[in-house]
Image (spheres, rainbow, N blue to C red):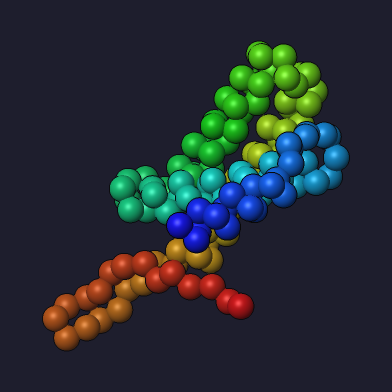
Length: 127
């Protein structure tokens, strides 16, 4: 019950989000694309190991971002140039997110053990 009260109190500080074509808006699209691509890279590694996980993460995230921007353009909430700018920022973020997740976050590990050879994923990051 305490958590519900705290959540209700915090919701009073939330305002309506507004979009612009400024740097903050495009950085948020890029960050969203990077996070989405990283999640798809991780899911691809777990469920589709026969495919290149970086390309799967990049392509699925980019396709999703482009479809969302087309939907906003179709509804009339974005102009064509705004939707294109948002989709480009999302695509750039997807490329960075897929590259970093594949190359640095999920590193393949192969090492000998007593029972045989261990093949797996080492999840690591630096603080």
